[in-house]
Image (cartoon, rainbow, N blue to C red; front, side):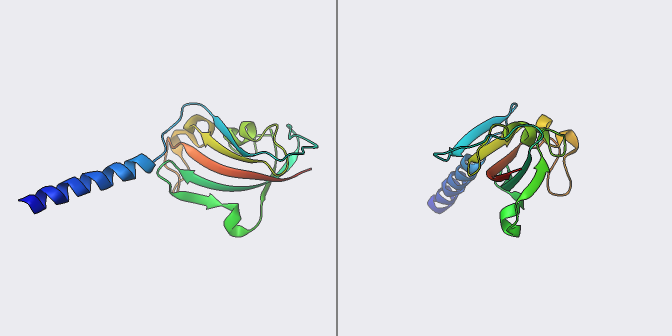
Length: 135
């Protein structure tokens, strides 16, 4: 009987730890600056071509994409609707070498339809980003 109780308590503790590591959904864009270079000659603005390294995850920690794994940054024109809204807004006024963590609500990501098979509908997206270059 004591063994069953111990196993039950252990299972509850492990489940609590798993849930504690899960990030929560957000309803607005959250931008966290993780590193800002001492010198910044230029900030990103709409119309700039930016080169960004990123790692994208779901709130449960599942990684769905990463430019780091491909060893090549992703390039696009900022503010032109070429990427999800969370990126167009979350990468503005950034310096080369700056690192940001973006928590993007579904409404600024892939919405209710998601991007199957890796991103479910209604998903909050978490991106660790690093600005490599501005053109």
